[in-house]
Image (cartoon, rainbow over all chains, first blue to last red; front, side, top):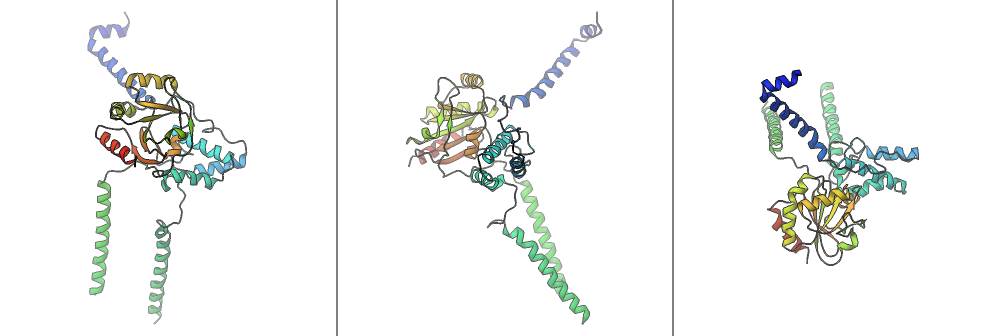
Length: 152
Length: 178
């Protein structure tokens, strides 16, 4: 009689315990797999464009587009199926003759500014760009006042 | 001297105000939903092939036929999609026309999903590369859009439909009629 069988015969509860653990382990491994689709990635999700210059443009653009499934990653970074589908859109649109900014505009039109990581000066963001300038100006004025006071 | 005092207390007040703001924002639930920017715009053109033999595929032209519809984005591999199935069935029972877009799905899996959870859809289009999902400004499954009779996107529901959302979606459908 093998060692395992004799242990099971002597401690039947142990075998049940082991099976429970095996089942639990399967659940942990199985659950995320069940939440994924079983289709292959879109044609241009992982395939680079043949034209190296166009691929470089695609790569630069993809690094500044947000993955909507995994919101702190760019679509260039992410292996989520949806990020792959977005890369496919970027590459096929560039291949069709769109400029990178046209592709960005196409996504922003659908998802709003949130989808783009590229900082832009517009009606809602200009204070972010103006404030540092104002602070530096203020500092210069104060500094001049102090230096003058010291000379006097 | 008093001017300096006032200034210092002012700094303390500003710092306390900032800390209060942080504490408030930290206690607020984070909203991870990305709202579609396509509400009020016409549905972009698309054509999707049929996935199952008993329902035709879906094209943008089918949406602009005068009758408001629910467009449900789902997938057989999506657990909340199974959870919302009875509520979609309830919406259909109460007269809503529902068309489906199956995201990255195999025909046999969709057929099994429909056999198990019911089929409230009048049409189902298969979207193997999420192209229509991206056209709609949708970022996950399930999502449900109200499309009016002219094919204009009127409302977006993100996440699974629960019992309390059924009257809400029916009201949005009625609103889309006018």
